[in-house]
Amino acid sequence: MGNFQRDGSMAFYNQGARPNYISSIEPIHFKERTVDTQKVHGQFTGNAVTFLSEIRAEDFNAPRALWEKVFTADAKDRFINNISGHMANCKKDEAIKRQIAIFREVSEDLASRLEKATGIKGYPGIADLNFSGTHNGMAREKANRTANKMKGVSLSHNDSNGAPAKGSHATTTA
Image (tube, rainbow, N blue to C red; front, side, top):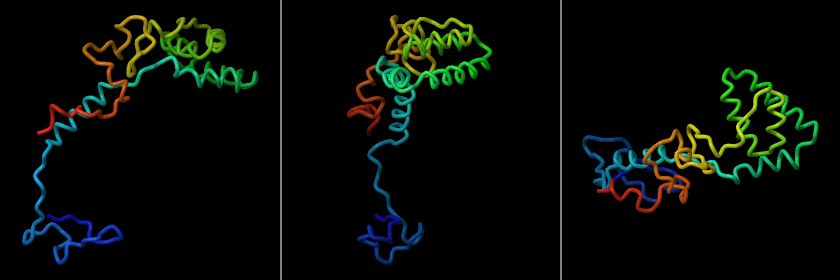
């Protein structure tokens, strides 16, 4: 057994005269792996990809406080001009309607001002929308709850926020 940690304050055993390179005369012997790392990594990556974050009502608390309690009237006007100015570059009204629905979850005043500035009426909120890349925890219908209306995706990862959980590699370890 050997490694390349030969110098420095943490190298309390410098492995003597063993070469500091992979030598054919004195080869390094590696421990046999107890886990097929390709399967474990695939399992982890698969879970990470199929687990996406979820939009929840509390996600709008901080932006709501910013809009209602921090921004002055002038700051609100600048924000509306800035956002609506960028929305004007959008070629699809559908994208603007959806974005206004998201802003409506922050504040009805904010959404109404954006509707007035863009001339486009947004959706009444996100409860009836489905998103690409994130789950909608505020959806009314089950079909809109998972991203891209994916079928067979468990939302049970919420407890660990997508992190590996004890036993999650049970089927992939040797």
